Length: 459
Image 1 (cartoon, rainbow, N blue to C red):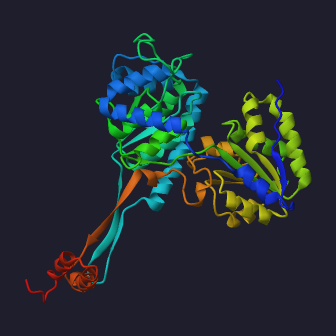
Image 2 (image 1 turned 60 degrees about the vertical axis):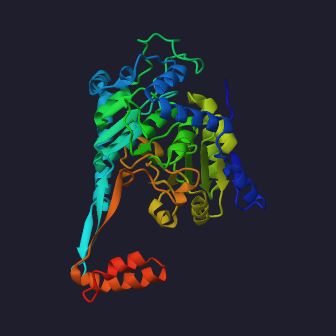
Image 3 (image 1 turned 120 degrees about the horizontal axis):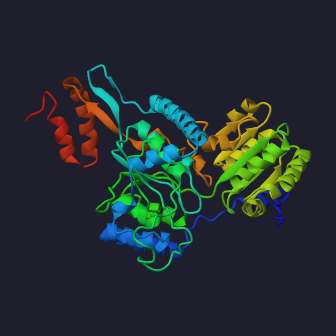
């Protein structure tokens, strides 16, 4: 079957560019009301009935029936067996990727994740104590595809941060199961479609415990705790609309990383990179989802023509051609700019998840780029290398939130406590300041507590 990918062709020189540009960027992140209602019902049920509710929903949605939660728990033995069972090339790739991800996040921890303190002239100690979260939950998608790379990117920074317990949930639906009906449709001994590469990644990344559950019920189990699944302090990791909605609902009860939208790539090109490389880079995000967005900005009209020709030539070769075609036609764009400087300005407006600077001199343009989840510099730096093994985290802000959000990192698995030790001498000067301000706010107990520590205070 032939699929046609027709990304919008725009030019900043056109009078109606702004309207067309905004229309292409528009994406509604509103969750369907029916999903919101169903998720709320699932969360309330799991909070009330615990394991029993999780078992019911796992049987209903994944077709995976089990007599108890113990039957759905993966063990360290399972992880090791999976690691030993996968091909040598996959074992070596996992270990190499994990080593690079760990090295990057260890450097990140040294740069921003250490406790510090200093003393004032009067001996008062001020500082910050950085401590890891006790227990975190990571959601690893497992319904339509398997993502061992996502497991590495979530578990390794948590491990580097010093988190003692990393609880993984991963759906393992029975092949051909239908998300209707109750339990009892499958034999109690049925096993879902476990992905050995995911379990091997859990072994490499240091996951503590894991359960073959998914969806809103898995988020609820992690957020509230059940008889078997321990309550966590924070939940990270991507998922479908039900998972995203559940994470929004439980935020405040636990921390979450972010609510991710569709994948995005923006390529800034000066026309020197082979056109087929850039076409494939656009495909790399388009193949995720029909709503994914792939945009190319370039001052050279002939180069945009060349990339379009490569899109048409390469698309029939892609196993996910239908998804790519829908993504590029619905949300993709090839935009001719007046200059690379203008391209950088437009990029900052978009604040993309992945930003490739595909030019001969990428460092010339990098200082102009303020907003992006990750910036990939140079023609040889494909976004896919960042997804798997470059080292920096691939969990990135989407939908323009890179204007105020950051990639997942060690800091997401740590918290900071202020340290204050006031000396007797410091209490004399600070106490007077606090007294004046507290009286001004009408909080006499605050003022009196400070005043009692002054040497001339009348007890």
